Image (tube, helix red, strand yellow):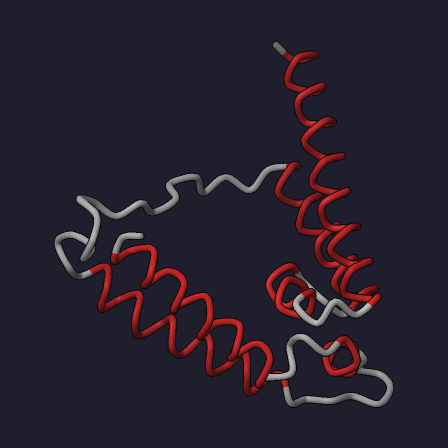
Length: 144
């Protein structure tokens, strides 16, 4: 393993710990946050605010460097199109998050518990990815 592999594993571990400690892997906490008209639980505002603040500061510091530490150049997305595919994908993601109370990062962390809801979530996540890839490949062939 390279230094970058160890650094990536360490960053993933820190991210997983943050998700777990912040309650992001508990569907009841997330659904309580989304239930603004009922028994609203505002605690995730602090988790999200901390993440946004941390990223706001560190992205500026990192992107002011001429190059990353272990790569020759930064790989920053350049696509800024808001198209039908983005809107539909965002809607599906939001609906899934609202129904399950879990999004992919916390879902993968919760999967480590091997609880039935976490396993069902991950199976559904991968089934959705597989179905989308098939649909996308078919629509690309029909357009080309």
